[in-house]
Amino acid sequence: MATTQETRLTPQETAERLDHFIAQHPRLFILTGAGISTDSGIPDYRDKHSQWKRQPPVQHHDFINKIYTRQRFWARSLIGWPIMRDAIANTAHHWLVSLENAGQVQSLVTQNVDGLHQQAGLKNVIDLHGRSDRVICMQCQKTLSRDKAHLWMAELNPSFAALTATAAPDGDADLEDVPFEDFVIPDCPSCGGLLKPDVVFYGDNVPKERVETALNHLAQSDALLVIGSSLMVYSGFRFCKRAHEAKKPIALLNQGITRADSIATLKLDSVISPVLEACRAF
Image: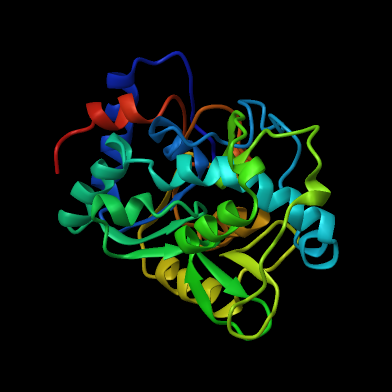
């Protein structure tokens, strides 16, 4: 499958190419990543070369097995979570609602955990990596709201709650050089187990049933459209790989390189919101 590399185009020119792709493939499987939420004030992970902008995110094994990792994570979240919690869906999210309302979205799978697609009004969303607004007990599997856990930890750690830092992806913050070992983490109120955001951390696996559901939707679609993802994580790239194997067209709208550039039918290297604003109304 030949790759069409589109560079140095205006948003209008890029939008015209995307419009043409959508018109040719009316039942789209859409995959979104962090790049679609940056205009909502939520930072992304990678630069245009797909390199980390900061230290890689917390690893699942470390979070489960190291108390200091959990203390550092929750202390930084005291600053970062409110920024993510208060984020508002942007033009790109609302454009996808219009596309869904026009009957052109077979399914939308998001790698994001911010819930902004649902906030915008999208109905058929698969949260591939879970949702950050829930906290789950790793022992009894009961869940509670992230806001409740946040307030609980702030009450237990007033000195940390008063700190400030730059926002980082997924409710994190660039907080360093503080005594994380002093941070008090509450246990599950039901069983005393370990509390964790109800998201798939790096090094963990997406639930098999969730992946199979998404792949079934992909099989019923005409084409794959990726928006705002470098696809460097296999959990997202797998959909491009499967689409390529099934000879389904792939369009990429992302600022910078992606892991699927070599197998894409259409590559649109561009900022996202201005392009979608210029697309035709559905």
